[in-house]
Image 1 (spheres, rainbow, N blue to C red):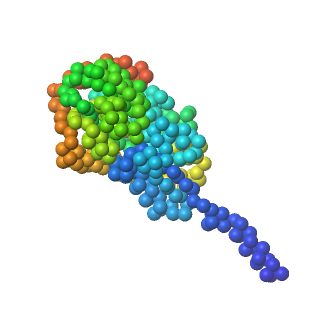
Image 2: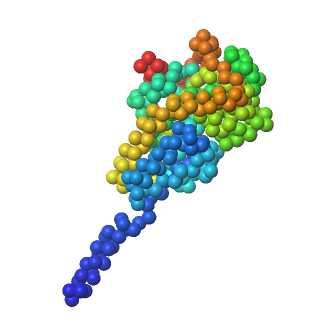
Image 3: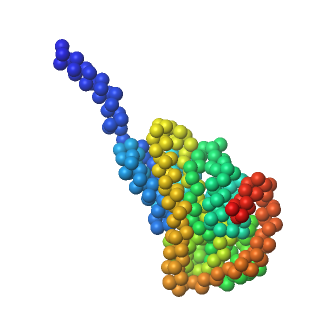
Length: 329
């Protein structure tokens, strides 16, 4: 009788505790479209590393870089359907879902990456992380990748020099409108196709931070690079809302703490990573680097002022004012 009772008790205990011990870990597939040595690529790998160290057996992060699992064209649908659980797309890709996010693409709005970071820590920008919930996505953090530099097949010094140039842009109406305003022809194109399009002459220009210029070897097919920092490439780390809310509260809290730590590292190191990439591009001597002067910048700023005014109603005057205030600290 005692043996039977002990056996029964053991079976009950096994039924209670075995699932937590034996269950497979929750898998988070994190897909992105750049290389591992970019700010976003390093951030994804750091997230994977810290989760393995702190949540081994509970959560497993699988990282798929460089469009190896899904690309620009289908990554949001992959997140919506559960093929992946985490992405960090450029906010340019999210503009159609949340018009206020267009603030990040407005040219010559932010004076520096530091101004972008200040804006991201203010209430208006924090509110925008929640602006995708109605579409099934939850914003978790902003990751930065430095200023966009314009590469081209010709010397670009003034807005007039853009006339007639075909330029690849992300899927952003603001970026497309920027180049149209100045007489260029914007072409929206997935990132994975950019190098080949530039190599074959399908497009003659593109805009990228230094790390992406180097990572995709864009400098090898673009004889000129204008260092203008006309806007700053910002990623929003997003997840499927249903998936995220289904996680146990304690586990979700641990993941949020890890992401906060990773975000601090990514945003701290972005400038250094891009500075090193710039050095390598200069050393390769494949492109002539044209550094925009303060006087030239003011000319460009004046040229695009009508564009910023045009988008004020969509972005929101309150969001725009908060962004402009970040330039003044």
